[in-house]
Image (tube, rainbow, N blue to C red; front, side, top):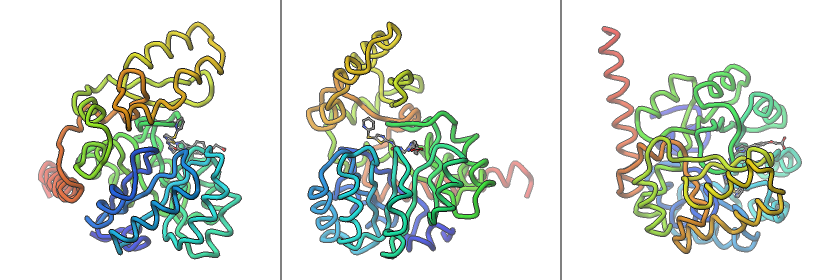
Length: 314
Ligand code: TUI
């Protein structure tokens, strides 16, 4: 399948694995890229040297294109922005902030830059700064989120910019991929569905919680602090939301989530940790390899388009 994004990135399928902090390591990224999608290493809150190591390990396992996601709230973001240049990374995505100050250096190094945006205004600004594409991420996503749904955001971003648009948020199977194309996207980025792949090295408790989740099992903490984060509901979200509704201080709220993602991903503490996942977790329950996931998505997407053609009488 050829789209503006498969052409831009030199990949086989228009499917990008999201840069999930603590989750998306060299193992997952190389598996996705080897299977024909775009694998992404998440810098998350890690150090620049850790990210350098992850890049080198990915190169050992995979000679196809892969990317690095830089979470811009990371205190080492400046250093990581250098590391991706030094290591010759071909694709950089960014999240949770504005990457304008790095753009010139990255573009001069030939890096394809794809900021994740949650609004039309940010998409337009990124296009003006020289972004090669944008990920329009709806509020259905897991982790740090914006306000607007994928269904509303994607077509508005598509109309507002000339660069290719990648849809993200709430996409978990081939029907979601087809829907994203219908909205004018040229590819999709998915996170939650990759959490339960064989090559995803998260704690088994985390995977089980994603598989068991129902449609209404995510909660958004931090709406009052300006840093809304979507996770699967548990003891932590219950306490957080109770404290938040009583007007607890930022310091007290932050204490409750400090190190929470690592707690869930590494230690398997799915009651006190932050089990980040999107609203589509209720649909995501098929385990298997990344290659199987990509093939299934493409075949479901084709079936979906064929079914629609039949319904329309073409
Ligand atoms: O970045 C994400 N999702 C994330 S990052 C993350 S790590 C984390 N861990 C604990 C607490 C908080 C974060 C987990 N999930 N998605 C991409 C995304 N970016 N969504 C929304 C945005 C965004 C928000 C504001 C992009 C730009 C922006 O601009 C603000 C500005 O500076 O003008």
